[in-house]
Image (cartoon, rainbow, N blue to C red):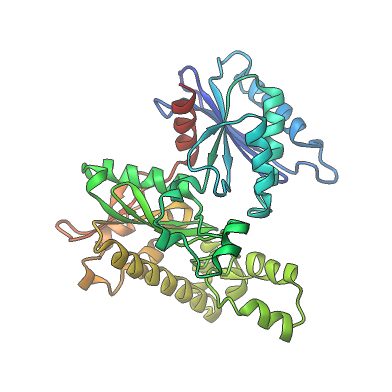
Length: 389
């Protein structure tokens, strides 16, 4: 278990929780100021040899570590608990106060996000038992509930789609919404006037087209597998690949799912999924790393061009998340050759290291290219506070 305590004076914080199957990430945030009172991670929940047996024990471990660092959750006048939930299905298009019915529905939606929703539900149950304050679910899919039907609809039989809730849901929505708003603040322009393409690039990657603060398209779909090349996920493949692998390689559906989600992407092409290590191998002349990098860039350009067409032009191209915020070479490669579209970066600005939101395109460029750090915890805290008042 790790923890990073930050001494900041503030009141009435929101506890933001992100529960995984064997981990609990937490942050104590004051929504109005953005002050982080404490943050940390409980790991190896339920694993052999771990002293954290389950998520209820993880809540106690979190509280104990915070007390050690001078933060007593029973004394800080906790306002609410905000929970990150990956999939809201067709039911949840906005944050919602959690009651027994909401919790039951999060469980029921596990078929759409089997790696994420069950863990979130278990974390919610443990947190509700521990903290007698309002609990709010903030869904990764909610920001993309606004997608036009033409963008959210797959061309499969309508009765099948209705019966099984098949549509494009999109993910990383909390990040895309936060970053699109922060970009408007950075540029000093009304959000309602901006056409943005936002690239959330980490181990998981997604792109979105945002018009006037409203999402109109996104790269992830029914699941987080669709779209860009990611650390271990393939992104877009021919849908016929599943049947082909079943016939020719004798793989089961579960095995194919594992291949595409956990053994593909940068890892499948180069042997590494950490982008920093990929860049090191690239600099050393590794040909597999070069191909992986080029495939990822090609896919990114594909989506930037597609969303430029969807939006009828763009005002801002925005890079965010761990890779997007830190990889100078990727940003340069994605924008290279797009000068005729008004998209270019200033070499010195792109290379300058900073943790602040910043413009990296030249002065007077037709399209602003920006790097805007995401802060999903703050976004969840603010949405939680707004809902509970």
